[in-house]
Length: 236
Picture 1: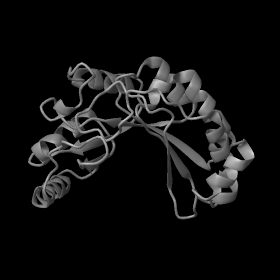
Picture 2: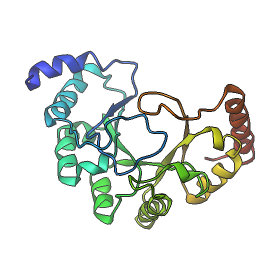
Picture 3: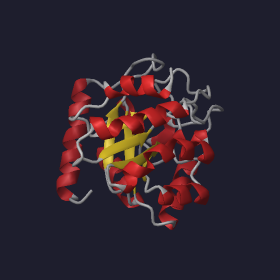
Picture 4: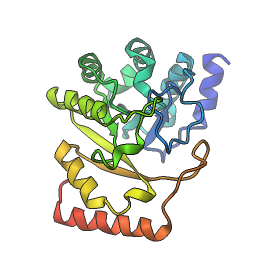
């Protein structure tokens, strides 16, 4: 499929109601989180640059000129694609970004963040979302392929962002064994200095066939605790 044909396909994906577009540059991830639903995270399957060009080319006619479209580079681990390759994906969007039509964000496990990556984030105005579930005891499901906990490496990546003065948000997974830890999780994440927290409740889907997902009452309790914490700690 050439760029023109693919652009016609992309036109059907973008609507005037959308605010966020998620792109997956690679399926590869160095982590092996126990609850991950992606079956091919060990494979380095890469998005074609033609997709980036087609998406960028479709935005002017498919997105209101008064709106800002957030393009989120997700995974897998988007940084596993490498800086040179990611720049190749970012460049087609540059006229739109400079014009204020597009804003980029990466959702990363943070283990690959370096000063060189921070240079790239600054150059392209990329917002950073970090995937971390909470303090060490809560983060135990985020492991590498050898079963080793990744907490220290995730925190090291966050500390690199902090040294560079780059703000970051957090996306955390809530499992059956952490639904009672909302206050501990939020207090820890606030201490890290994140600007926003989003929670995904673990679901048994795709590759996550053995997960012990929370029952509805546990989820309700977790959200009650979140709202109670937020009422006492406004601003995050």
